[in-house]
Structures are given as structure tokens and as C-alpha cells.
Length: 150
Figure 1 (tube, one colour):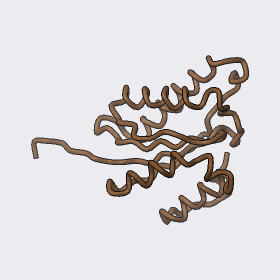
Figure 2 (spheres, one colour):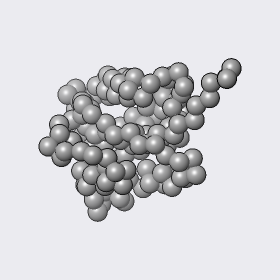
Figure 3 (cartoon, rainbow, N blue to C red):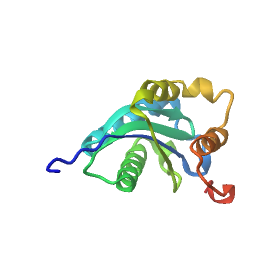
């Protein structure tokens, strides 16, 4: 086949180191926009970015030119460097070591977008840990909880 085609929607989730509540309201929108720019530079279309004080969700279309692990590495590294320039309160900002990446059916894109947009309301009832464990269960991911959190 002469043409290479790839259409992989990914719902990426990762938290701040030790799930510290260090994404403050004064920075969150700028952070999401910055992450959108990183996605664009990686030729991966960001569809929705959001989160809460201790984690991020990115719904994106992964470029055929980059592996998922390289994409995650670049997003985390670049955004961490950027946020540290946003004030002394962010000098010790870090992301957790791991991440969760879940494939999304193209017919479910709007549902996932709304889920990401409603993070503040969602987390008035559920912690990030509860949310993440539900993702693992919903996707039938085998895991050992001793190794899920860093």
C-alpha cells in the first residue's frame, strides 16, 4: 500500500508528582493552551485539554510521525519547564513518572470532550485516584495498585 494512514484518538491522563494540588487557577488555562501548542508542534491535534488541580487530561489525535511514548515525554518535559518559569510558586513543579493512555472510538469524541470539560464538577465528588482506577477497570487493564502511584 503506497499511502500510510493512521487515525488514533487518545485520551491521555497524568498527574502532578505525588498528586500535589499545584495547578492553580491562575495558571491552568495558560497551561492548557501551552500544552495545545506542544501538541501542534508534534503534529498531533489537541481536541480537548483540561484537568484539575492535581492532574491533566488531553484528548488528541496522535500523529503517525511520533510514538505515543515520545509524545508523552515531550508534552510533560516541555510543559514542566514552561510552568517553572511562571513564578516562584512553581519552581518545584513536576509531573508524575507514569501516565495512562486510552484509545477512544471516534464516535465517542464528544462524550470524552464533555468529560474533560466537566472536571471541576466531576472532582467535587471523586478524587483523581478514584477516577484513574475507574479508567483502568473500564478498559480492563491489569494492574497492581502498589505500582500505580509514585
